[in-house]
Image 1 (cartoon, rainbow, N blue to C red):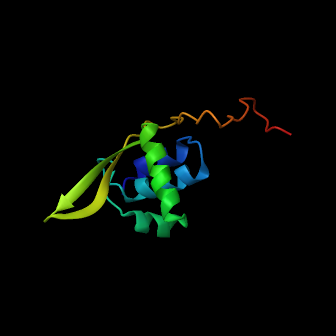
Image 2: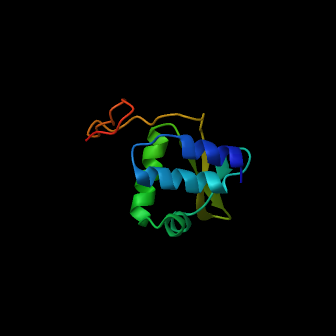
Length: 110
């Protein structure tokens, strides 16, 4: 685990809480190169999210440039994917067009 990477994951702005949980979970498991290979079930158990939500969040994180996913195989059988995290500290994910970003003023909307 890389504390620097974990801190950057916490500081990264993403579109949904589910994406944040998955990103932090991956960062917590990543080595110093930003790589990890947990299975969907493991991430689901750690975050409390449904497996399908984990899969969707990983896809969204990839589409927004926060990670790359590589399929792994060994001895003719599938293994968990390998994820490489790309966090530059303070990044903001592109919000889906249906999402409305929060106002940029210092006070929350009332």
